[in-house]
Length: 72
Image 1 (cartoon, rainbow, N blue to C red):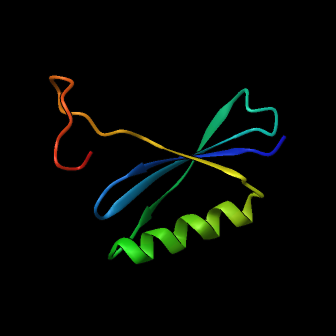
Image 2 (image 1 turned 120 degrees about the vertical axis):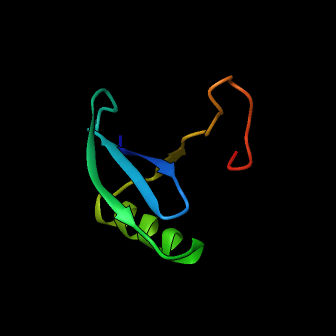
Image 3 (image 1 turned 135 degrees about the horizontal axis):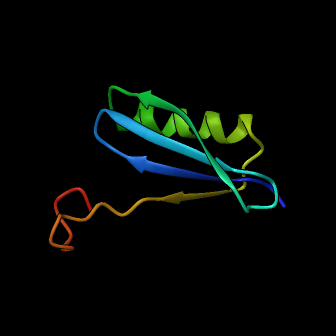
């Protein structure tokens, strides 16, 4: 199996984590600081290629009450 890349998508910062090849344990990667959505997409693609990732999962941003906000 290949590792999974997890992305916590923000407007200016992206939190990243990657699993081991068995997809059992994850570890954080450095936070990405981006200027716009296109830069963010390119950076995620670069990190995915660098680590041989075939699966990317995105976090679902919820409000404190559990509802979806504008970011969702």
